[in-house]
Image 1 (cartoon, one colour):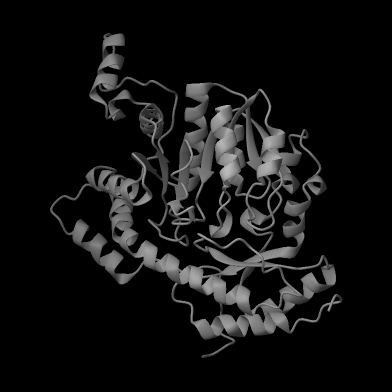
Image 2: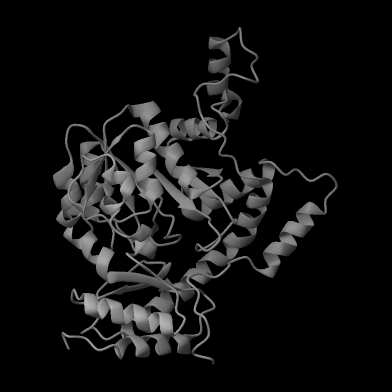
Length: 397
């Protein structure tokens, strides 16, 4: 093994069998390319795998976020959405796009997900939903959070874009909330190159998402009775072109569906390897230098989590220097570049807490990184990475 070889942040998940599936599909006489039967087949297969009643494929995880927030606004009205400060920008952007007020709360340092106590403290009479992110494959749910939200009749939305296949109490994340969102971006646990999914057990929400995905068109409704009510209400309109909402075109293609079907059967086995890799990584890191007490039960690691045990700019610079020298790609700040309260799009709005007030989020913003994990990663390379990290001198040891 050449230890100095480039360690990429992520690796393309498209394999030869996926390309063969695409070529076989395209080799048909007059293959359909825009979304159709293959997308529907993938949606059904995904729902069965996840354990939900309904799934709607879209062109990205960000689109899944947007449509979810827009549908909640249409069905339940405005208000506040509780969000973590450590997440991807599209989660917060979707809340803003739908004209909700985001309420930022801190994270649990053991899961990097939204802290249950902070969520419950932030709930007000205007709280419409809690939009949590399962960061880097970790489970952000707690039994206490699920029970309290159910009792208070507050919607739970799960962002599972980085955590395909992770579980809480043996049940897959994304099957607990009123709705959940997934991304199939090229470097995620599985990929359709670009793509996403909105999942739910609520039929009304499902039908609204289907309409919002395709310009708000009523003909996208799959329930015959519901579709007929719209047609009877607007007899003066061409019944193929009744637009219930001023919506978007966020449809995927049939090629995305073909890739999803091809990739899904490898997901569980790939996740087992990802979790194995993470356990080797955390076991061999020096706990005097780095945090190793992450709650890994049920996780499906997306990328290795590296967080300094003590705050030190000197140590931070040394870690980044050694990673750069050894051609190991990394991202500081963990999910989404770190504390969203530090981002210019939030600062422009000028009405949110100081970034330093969310201490756990701000800590990983400055002293946390993620490093690429992949099912094909050699075990000995993980040990090599831990060795070079453990050899970084620290003012605390």
